[in-house]
Length: 248
Image (cartoon, rainbow, N blue to C red; front, side, top):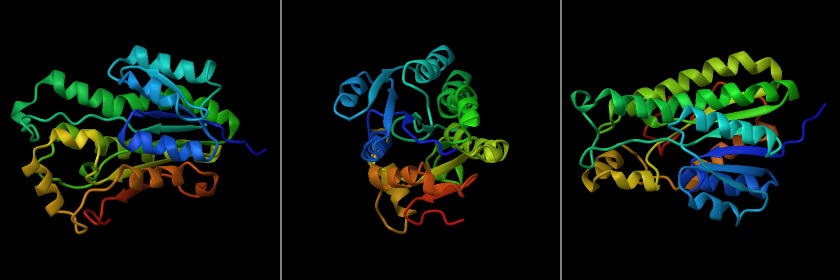
């Protein structure tokens, strides 16, 4: 039985990669639940056909579970889960050295970047399994694939963990019509990038053969592809979208 895809959940949907992804999904007639801690997500969702905005904090497990419950009970379900939201705290425009990281900061980054995707997958994958159709796309980073100068160890660890989580999950659900993949962007022109100093941003671009950051839409196109029915034979992969900064 063919399952007609109609519902997607995108975290970090108010701006950047998340907002660009919502735009592409909506063009295909998919209804999107846009989750973000930024309250403007509600207003922005009102401008997208079939979208609903939901304000929540991915740093709180109770709010993550509540989001999943809303998706299942009020939004009509979730065929496509896009774990896009992430944080990369900076210290004076640069990455933290390991000796500068306290446990609270480490745990905060792990919670939002890695544990939140795990919790949403745990809550939403069973219905995809029953429907025999689903797409999970986790947004990792070039820093999860290779060493990137100026990036904090907690960020690299969380993004590398997300790639490992993706591979294992893909294997667990491969027989159920559910694919699980990663997209690993290099530097991107997003609000998150403004936290870095100009010197740090230039150092990052020096390691990119294309000598420029990606646009949010260039990353969203890769995410959108992995969410389509046509990508049914792609699972357990990490798609590198980084201007040549890392070539596996």
